[in-house]
Length: 185
Image (cartoon, rainbow, N blue to C red; front, side, top):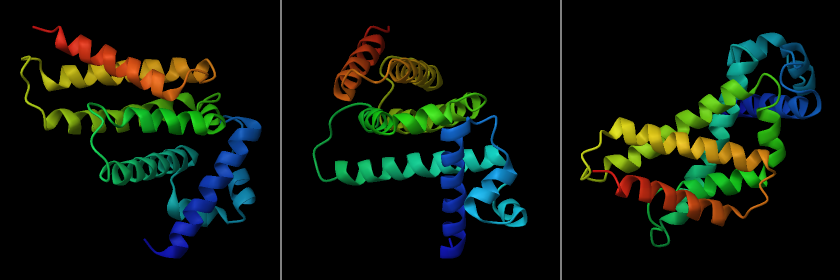
């Protein structure tokens, strides 16, 4: 991607986050995003179809970048077992609690949840694809089970203020998933 395009997109994403934090997602308009980013509406629409597209793009870029950094770091150390993506996602959410709260503020929860669910689904599918299905369970059922559990746990933990350590939540999640999958016929 051209540096100017990347810079413009990044500026628009930062403007949206800043406005969401101050006003809530529903109250933000494309006009305000353009004003905050100091770009014209035509420039905005050259990159995004609307504020939902801008939000999805920014969150997707942000999470994928964080996961890529984790994967690169993990390549330098031994594997820490199943669902290694869980701890970095939890740590990222905890470290960016205000960002996550802003992204799920009034009106924004549907797109944010859908994006997190899609990303988590991809990660779980990729992990399950390299493991033999010894239990006889269908991969799509296992994926749905794991993703649903993770999303519920993440939401509950963040709503409670993320006070428990991310490592403890990660360990409990892995234990619950492993026991749940291990007990299946």
